[in-house]
Amino acid sequence: MELVTPDIGLIFWMTLSFLIVLAILKKFAWKPILQGLKDREDSIKESLSSAEKAREEMAKLKSDNEKLLAEARLERDKIIKEALATASSLKEEAKEDASKISGKMIEDARNVITSEKQAALAEMKQEVARLSLEIAEKLMRTNLSDDQSQRALVDRFINEVKVN
Image (tube, rainbow, N blue to C red; front, side):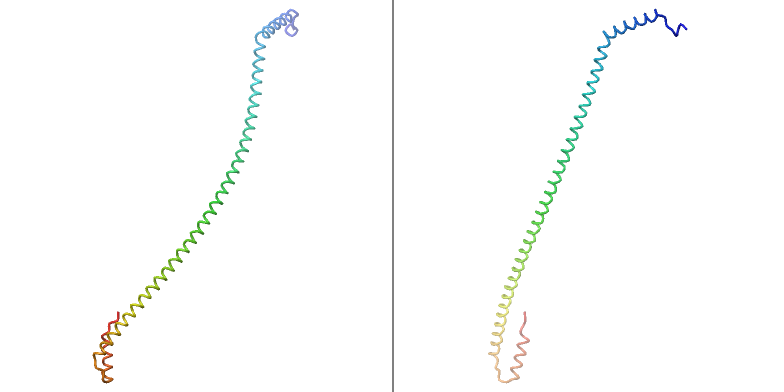
């Protein structure tokens, strides 16, 4: 039973040795251990505050990015509307220009046709006058005493006339 109930001497020496070890640990090891724990606690607090700041900055950056994205979308929509308006106005201008050009071309063609028609009529008048003179000249040369000779003369003139 000696093992279960320690002797006073044993308790004294064990307490003395424990107090000596405790004093040595307090003098040499306790301060560095506590300082290490305090440093570790400070670094953990600092890391947590840095992580919180980073999280807040990320949230701020995210909101700034969303704001910039919304502004970019608005700017894109504005540019697209301006481009569509410009394209529409250019299209209308092109239609107006094409209409003016085609109207001018039609008017020019009408003028050319009119002048060609007048030139053709003038040429035809000259040809008719020339043929009339030739016929009159031939008639004058021929003696027209009877109807039968007149008809023969007219038939002969008609056969001789070359129509261009």
